[in-house]
Image (cartoon, rainbow, N blue to C red):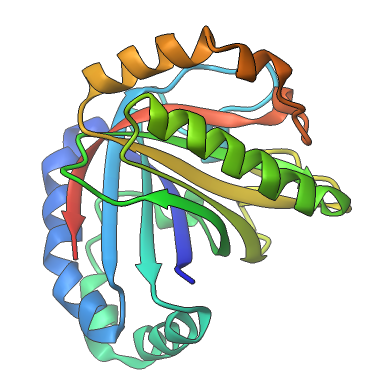
Length: 238
């Protein structure tokens, strides 16, 4: 099953073109190492939250925008092998010399896919999300995620994926655990919804929020600590 390496970063707004080029130029190397798809998305509609949000997750400054991104691998073994190659290949060190953002505040981790419905189809908009889910609720969350995927694809989403934290390191400055204020008995979830366009996303969400199945769904996590936002793809390569 698809293994996900997820990232969230704060990038100066003035560096958008430089970041896009940096990511695009790096993809041939990542593909050589084993990445099957790389997606980079740029902040479009990222609200401030009362408890958690994307901006706090990476300590974003007023002049920075949020980038929500991921690598897809065919398996965790492929991801682990790729990371070993990345750590030892001198080309990676060279590419990292002129980063167009503060890498110390980037959060990253590895995630096992637990629900994946649909397929990329001319993705034009992404809803990205992070959750803290009690370990004891993994089965309930998996069932919940699959139920939500059925509803979202019914109303126009092209793909809905949720992944359970498997290798999510603690960071010195920022990390996924801090992003969602995860407790010791909780695991971080990384997920997204792909749409053909922002207009499709907006129309789909309007219908989804009026669907009685949403009101009846039992949410197996603390929704107040969920982190979410809307993003426009700037790089989507496979």
